[in-house]
Length: 145
Image 1 (cartoon, rainbow, N blue to C red):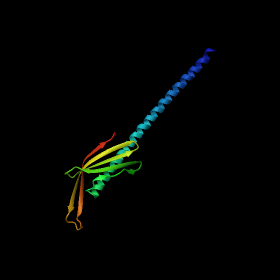
Image 2: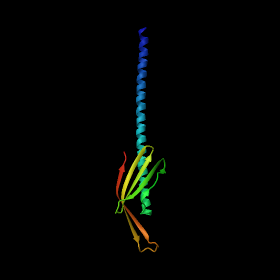
Image 3: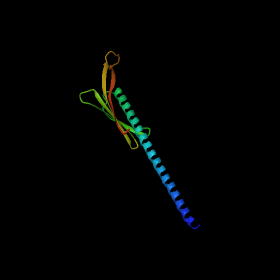
Image 4: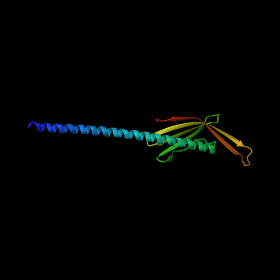
């Protein structure tokens, strides 16, 4: 009967160690899953912010086809974006670069577009009305997703 007292303690320590290892493994897997989901969420949101910046850049060009410049960081929801509009020398080709950023995630989208301005000579407005046509030629994405 004296030999059974020591074996009970060994079994309790063994079962406790296995339970602790399983708990640690489950906690580690849960933490990893959470980090992956957060990473994907932030990069997806940064992508949408960059796309929103592209749309704003196209809107600016529609209102003012001669605009060339860069905006500062503009907040939108939990993130921010900035756009830069530049022109290829000697052409009507304009590049709009938009960067979306949320937490540590950052995405860059570059769009090349042909901006064509036609003056409507037949309009009754003074000065004559300008008709702006923008044709997107390419859409390039830089980011992990």
